[in-house]
Length: 356
Picture 1 (cartoon, one colour):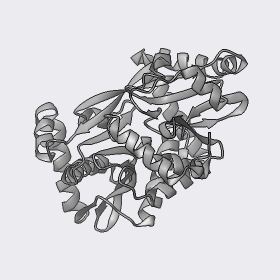
Picture 2 (cartoon, rainbow, N blue to C red; picture 1 turned 180 degrees about the vertical axis):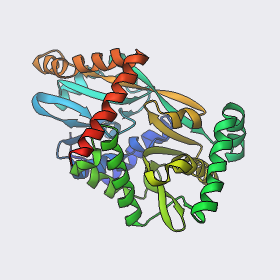
Picture 3 (cartoon, one colour; picture 1 turned 30 degrees about the vertical axis):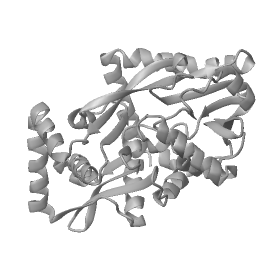
C-alpha cells in the first residue's frame, strides 16, 4: 500500500499495460494519471499493488477514511472506478480489503465487468454514450433518423447564432486558462441555480481540474473544448480523453445565449472533432438529462454500492449511507416524486441566490 506519488516508473508502466490488455474501454479515469492527480490533492489517496512473484498483477486505487471506511479514488467526481488487474488473477475481496485496512469500499461509478466488486452493487445506472466509431457522418445519419426534429432545430439555432451574434468558432483543444476559469464560473452558477452542491466550491476539486488541464499522456489528457461567438466564449466543456475515448465531465454555457442552445451545438462540434481525432466514443456519464437523451446512441451500465468486511466499520457504513441511498432509489423509481424533488432543488437554488 503506497501513496500514488510513491509508485515507481516501472509500476506505472505495468499499470498502463494491464489496463491496455484488459479489453475494457480506454476510460481515462482508470489510468494512473488520474490517480496521481488525486493523490496530489487528497492526502487519503492510496494504491494497493498486488504482486505475483516479482511482477505487479493488480493496482487498486482508493481513499481511506475514518475507522477504515474507504471510497473509490476521487469519489464524487470520478466517473469510472474499480481495480486494474490481470483477468486471470485469483484475488479474494476480503483479503484485499483487509490488507488495505478497509472495513468498507464505496463506489458510485463502478465499471461494468468488475467481477470482484459487482456482486455488492446496490443499484445500476445507465451511462449514456455517443458512438462515432464509424465517423461523424454515420453519427449524423443516426441522429437524423432517431431525433430528426432535434438535429434540425439545433443546427438551425447554430446558424441563427452566427447571423445574430457573430462568427461561430469552435476549438476542440483550447489551452487558454481564462476559458477554463470561465467554464468553472458558469458551472458553479449552474450548480447553485439548480439547487445542487457546488463542486467547484471545494478546493480539492478546483485544484484537481487545474492539474488535469495540464496533464498530457496517451491514456489520460485534459481536454477543454470551447464554442466562441465573435471571440466570446458561449459554451465550454472540460473532460478527459484517451486515444479512443472522451470522458465528458464538466459542460456549461452562458445563460445569456440559452435561446441558441450553445451547449448542444458544442456537443455536436465535439463529436465531429473527436471522430476526426480517431476517438470512437464520447461517454456522457450517468444521470438522466434531456441533452443526453437527444445526443446518445447507446448506454453502458455503471454501478453504485459498497463492499464490506464484517465488523463495526461495515455497520457504520450501512448506518451512514444505506438509508439515504434507499430513499434516493425510492424517489428515482417514482417519476412524480422525482419531478417534485427536481422542482424543490430549483426552488432552493433560487432562494439561495436571492439571499446573496
